[in-house]
Image (cartoon, rainbow, N blue to C red; front, side, top):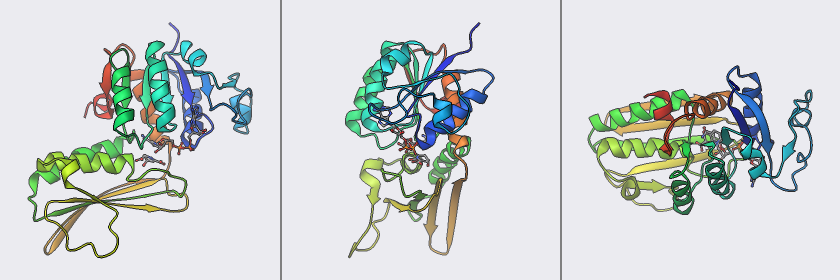
Length: 268
Ligand SMILES: NC(=O)C1=CN([C@@H]2O[C@H](COP(=O)(O)OP(=O)(O)OC[C@H]3O[C@@H](n4cnc5c(N)ncnc54)[C@H](O)[C@@H]3O)[C@@H](O)[C@H]2O)C=CC1
Ligand SMILES: O=C(O)C1=N[C@H](C(=O)O)C[C@H](O)C1
């Protein structure tokens, strides 16, 4: 039987290039197409040559529908506006849609939800094993501690990142809120500046650092009088995200239509 065919959207991006390499090196998947936005310099050229290596026999296209028709899975680390379009097209093609894109708002999530009635969608703000384990740990620690322990999520990323808090920080904040039995929407405090007043008991704070080429660092701080606990994940290489996304694309084959996350894929 043929190996599942995979399309990479946003192929020229930081994650796109990792994913092209990851699928090419994989023994249970094959690269069938690469998509970039209309007008991008890579469109019409071989993706391997664009990446500065040997030709891979896959020409970058700006036609997602044609690309998805050849595929069993679409791996998508692009931008919210593109991802919601891809969700509808992937559902039309009955391809598994793996969404790594972050910065999605309620209107985007509603469109992804609609697409998931017809197709398998796996979405996570972080596809790494380590972060998904950290999410579980965060929930457990938050459940064990009362509101004498202030919770802060601190994240650091490269200077090109466009959304904050990061998708991972929001996953960690959500886990902390669930552990504590509160709603994140009610407890969330982001971006303090000026005369903020003293810290409100029970809130969950978010701080974002942007600089240089930081791949992704996340701390969940539990701070009480006289002691602190810090849960930390440091990503030093984007292959951890690509590995998780490819695993999700293969896991999704044969699943029932619906929305899944990396906890489902990893069995956590
Ligand atoms: N869930 C996870 O594990 C991870 C998620 N991310 C997220 O993935 C996204 C992308 O991150 P990066 O690769 O660093 O960004 P990037 O800016 O390097 O790449 C994004 C790519 O998407 C392309 N693109 C945008 N609109 C498009 C369209 N309509 N059609 C086709 N291609 C389009 C851009 O041209 C670009 O090549 C971000 O939202 C980021 O937060 C990043 C790393 C891990
Ligand atoms: O934009 C990034 O780079 C990353 N984005 C994801 C996020 O928003 O959490 C995952 C990872 O931290 C890298």
